[in-house]
Image (cartoon, rainbow, N blue to C red; front, side, top):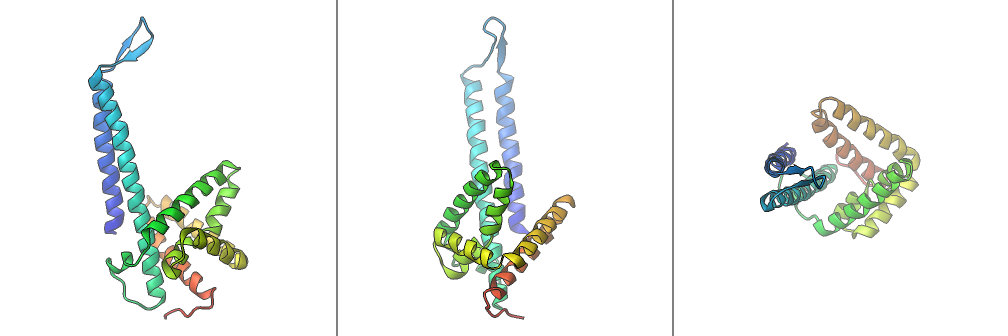
Length: 208
């Protein structure tokens, strides 16, 4: 809950800072009827540039925090399947953040390209790579090997996981429709169910 609040706070700060800078820059912009262009002094250009830089900065910070949340929840869910007690500290301990970042960037680019190709390939990428973080965190695999392992795993268990994947999407959609508050329940439940599926479909023992 604290981590989700952190993302919300970052986005609020981003809106306030960039909104203020944009307002400051637009207030000094003037239209020149002779040239047909908007003109502004050095202060206007500087504020506009600062607004763009601030937006980029907070965007990157927000993405990093969200990635950390996702990896931490996956780590906590995997620990629960082993019957280990979890805490805020343990959820973020022992994670290879570099590999998590590299894998996430690769998947993000592949998913984006997939959605450009008539949408369905994007969902296919999401499905095939949905266990990448599990293999990085649980097995210690590097990014590319974890992606390959996830693809092999999902293909080998496609019948079961396609139904599971559709159920997860439905849970996220319902959570989003409930004023986003439902996501606070849907996300941990889905990630925990995914961890159990990851364990059981590999024939690994799951703690009761």
